[in-house]
Length: 294
Image (tube, rainbow, N blue to C red; front, top):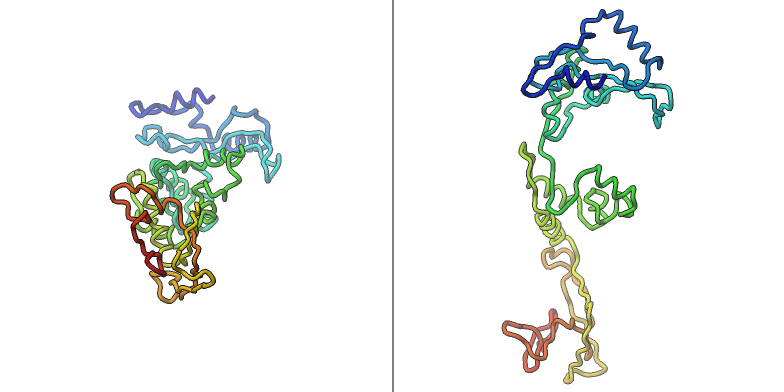
């Protein structure tokens, strides 16, 4: 039973004990496994365990479970199977059959690597894959857990995996992040063996740095304030020349119309300006970008 398995497994301070069924014959084990496969036993009544070392300091190596009985409908194979492999058994074999050379995992799988290697070596397979662990990428004020992100999607809190609020590649793409900015961010933070949290402002810095040399410049007035230039001809419109990107001379230039009436942001004018206010105010002059001093 699961309770007996836990009891015999031991703890970090106490060595495990061998199961009373550990020394069955090969023929008896094969017969039981075939009956498991045929669906003769109920869920949880039988398991197939690897025979490794019950005194190992690594609890994952104390005769771990390889197969268990689960009579559930599989989304692909239907009811064809009623026994399923455990993750630690399926993982190395899937990597081998899919010709994975390096299986990159997060740090919590480091203690599972001896079992990963044991499964492959026990089968005497050539050209074995290698498991390598590294620290998980964590960002400040950002949910990165796939389980929690999946809940946001399935419960309708976001529009999908590509919702711009999601920290997924698809979400970052819709938010405007370029591949170069993401690669640059990953190269700068590097790969570590210690868990840490990276400030999300560094990711934002990388996208600003990338877009600064690529993105064309445009201007917009969000809260317009009408400004009339009294000494400018009413029927005259000039076309001022402005660079599309001051960081990239090859981006060319564009024409901006200039006339007697223009609109500025409300925050750019103050009737009673405070100290160190350098925008437009009564009796003050400012220079308009690509135009005149008014």
